Image 1: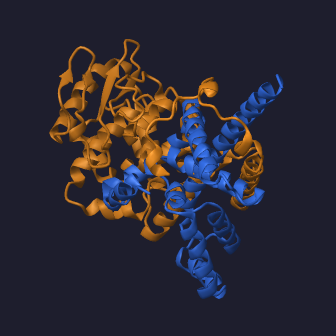
Image 2: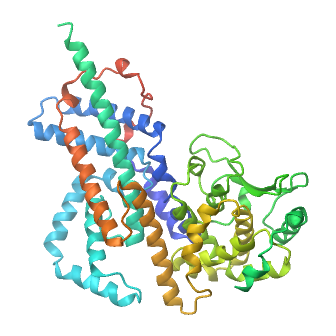
Image 3: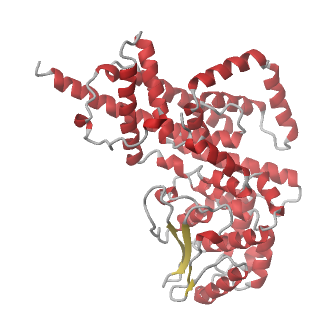
Length: 192
Length: 297
């Protein structure tokens, strides 16, 4: 898969000016996900993705695998709609298999004690330290958002906000499409 | 603060003269293009901005007849294919504009996340510490900024992380200071009008002492401010996000993300995705035709 923006953004992030550029999108994209245009774009992409899924899994094994394929396609379409500017979208596009494999490897190698050590060290270094519970919850949130496991809290909050906005749009779009599809299906079934 | 007292009075009649003065001062830093004498409008070529600004946008600081200085923002970046258009004199845009954001800023007409937008603003202010003094000394009649600029100085603490501090030692920081300073003056010139937007930030920043003495505590404070800003954004997103505590906000966010993911999972498990007739011609109701996104899959 071609991830065109993945190379550009880290390079921009390295410089001092790139740092400002990276910070700037915290606010606008959240509103971006609410526009009608974005939803339309995503809907069309989703339809295309669903068609491909149908073609590829014509002899689908189980309902579960089909629904998983549908969901994966929907998430990929969402990540494409994000244009690769956010970590979670890049993480989704770079492959879900990779994510699962990394997770399994991390669970095997990294003991749980290191997590508490990290939180303890975090509380020692900063004078105005957040309590460890905050750190724990941040880690939970990082696990939920794809590709945001080891992010610091401010970045994580940015990613989470964008991800929540994108998910909301995804839900809206999918429910709208589902409604249309069911209506179309009902209309097609009537003459019979 | 002494600075506040010097700028406490806002003399509207001095605007034209001040605009010229600003032009001179900012022209010293070689960051300005041509000046429109009619409007008192300065067009800033995109290339003259510091590296933080890469979009093709022009900033024009104009003064209205009723002496309301405002920052008009023309964005020419074709991201949203909106072309170039002036936003107008909405004060809240000045904050966005100063950040030099992409066209997406144009769409943020609402004051959705004012604190967040403002948090992005001060990233320049942090660097403009030293140059602010010079700027003030040179332009004693710069009453436009008034208390807003003082709060801008204080909002410096809300600025970006330690990376910004390290970037101060870079060579071309002087220019950055000047430009950001000019931008800050331009932006905050209209802040007097938007009290609601500014008051929130003022309440946060004035509670902090300025200047900060301990760099580490300053960094921690900045970090805290940043986190709080992001939490505000999150708070606006999450429904019933009226919790002010960090813990509860994070918890609510986690629950909401889980809920959304579950909702999507349920939606996608519906059979109709696979078996309902998906005919493109029949779906033209509200859909934009899919263009070149095939390579992603």
